[in-house]
Amino acid sequence: MPNLKIISWNVNGIRAVVKKGFVQFLKKYQPDILCVQEIKISETARAKEVFDFAGYQEFWHPAIRPGYSGTACLVKDNLKVERLSDLAWDDEGRILILDIGKYYLANIYFPNANHELSRLDFKIKFSDKLLAHLKKLETKKPVIVTGDLNVAHNEIDLARPKDNIGNPGFTQEERDWMNKFLNSGFKDTFRELHPQTVKYSWWSYRAGARERNVGWRIDYFCVSQNILKNIEQAVILPEVLGSDHCPVGVSLKI
Image 1: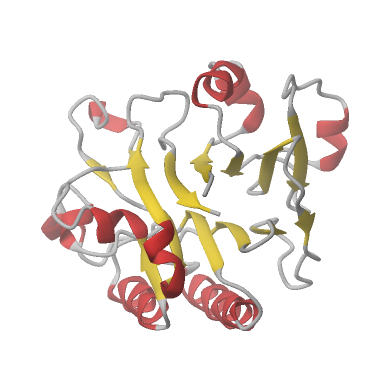
Image 2: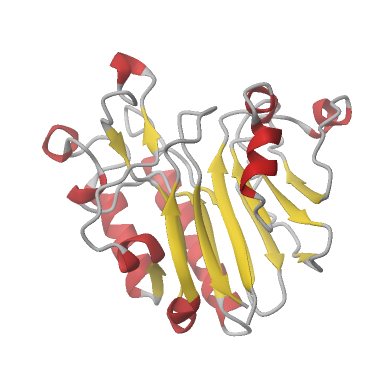
């Protein structure tokens, strides 16, 4: 049975990351599907760019607000996929869902709660709507959920948990929602395969946090429980530079 290699990366601006070796990353790691978040480019602006993503089909979901949020997927030309309709309530380009054959693949950029927790309520409402939609999809076929969830689930998932209690990404509300999400039947592939491994996927640009590995694991691949057995690898790639996040990935049987 062949394997499918899927990678997810919050690139913190597609134009910026292209200037920092994004195409070379694609050629080196050769994902069958790459899900990216925070593309920060409007449809109008993208039309003026020439991106060299040879060998890949492109699916874009920019936010209505220019230069903000947004998601995209690059899919190898030899794969047959179908894009599902975008959700009417998602005007920030945060959700891009593909039918990839045996599975649905949901590329998600979850809202940040913000420093004053000014978007915490919005994030929880967004997350609840999304979960209801994912569970509806799951009645048809298994679902792979990936992207920047903007939450460190447990203390093992960030370098300084006690200092960050109540901060965005580590509030009780966000962690409770993550519990609800996992209790609904989705499995965190990295934590399932590596129960005690300490690895991070995001570092602040401040105070040399990445060099000192003072980070957070907030980027995930979660899958419907019945396909967890198909996950052969779950990886985090901190050696890949170009963003404040690093890529995460899975290899799974199809």
